[in-house]
Image 1 (cartoon, rainbow over the protein chains, first blue to last red):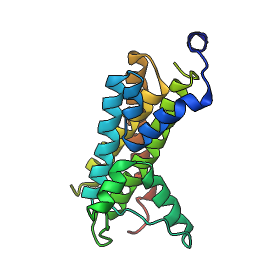
Image 2 (cartoon, rainbow over the protein chains, first blue to last red; image 1 turned 60 degrees about the horizontal axis):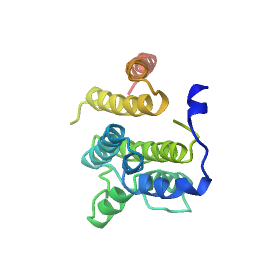
Image 3 (cartoon, chains in turn red, cyan; image 1 turned 120 degrees about the vertical axis):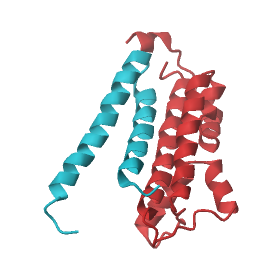
Length: 132
Length: 57
């Protein structure tokens, strides 16, 4: 309740630059809001999980609409932001289906993307004053 | 890194840390929530593992 009283509501559009930055670079949204420690932790968690996923032979799924689950997995992975596109450009994430850790790998990549989406929403809420 | 338990532990640690930072504000509460989430992750994995034990691989 006290946190609600302390926050000041701002227009919804005020949070858009923060949200976009938070999506592109994990933790950047919180950094823009002056929460350096949190931003650094989020960056380490999301980037670390994504890198670990690629190391474990995870796959970066294409946005293939003919296969709904593959499409959703790809959409979740895009949530990581720039690291996803960088990995794609570098030819990483082809996925080694026969590898023992293949399932772990893509799970790490998907969860990293989903976590970054939550982090992005958190940064947006703070930027528009919904959250302290 | 082919140890299933190690991968599971790293996953639980990272996700519970992120959840603790997102869902709690106070440092003490974050620590408590993070530890609870981490233990729940590992505990549920052990529980499901035991449930699956009788089934052939």
